[in-house]
Image 1 (cartoon, rainbow, N blue to C red):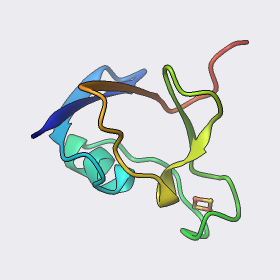
Image 2 (cartoon, protein in one colour; image 1 turned 120 degrees about the vertical axis):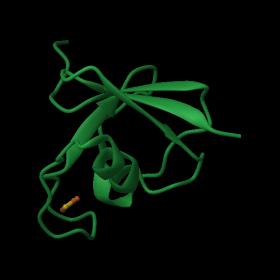
Image 3 (cartoon, rainbow, N blue to C red; image 1 turned 180 degrees about the vertical axis):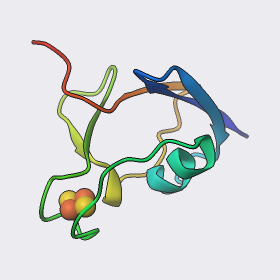
Length: 78
Ligand code: FES
């Protein structure tokens, strides 16, 4: 079952498979998430997913199983 991932602030969506690497979904959507180490160490790729508590590192994250995931490429105001 595919889920929808919405990348903000571009407002670009793509279909993805739950568990698919988030960077793959971003690339397919034409969204460039900055990366560095690609090992989860440098936090350059940090994004926030609405409804999830803490920012995540996109390079080691997978697409959630939520029907719609809204990914903010920049920190949300607190
Ligand atoms: S690229 Fe370094 S933590 Fe993701």
